[in-house]
Image 1 (tube, helix red, strand yellow):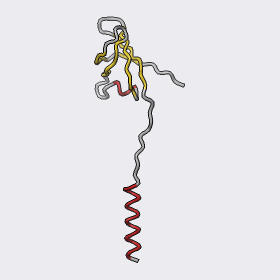
Image 2 (spheres, one colour):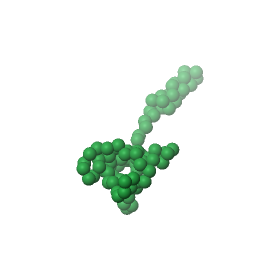
Image 3 (cartoon, helix red, strand yellow):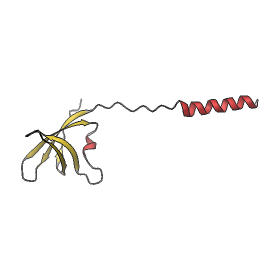
Length: 92
């Protein structure tokens, strides 16, 4: 009886520890267009690639937009920190 309980405990430990598999959700990685109001006046357009969520473009505590993107008007890669930007996303 004691051998059976040891085998049962080992089997239970194997199932709990050895078979644990974590599967990450496959979210769609895509590019988004961000429009920001420039302090000098006018609008600035940026293209940001590899975005899993629009919320990853902002800092959660300060609510500042903080991202690296390609400026549309000249194609330069720039770091952007701003407080007046927006993204439109089509809802299906």
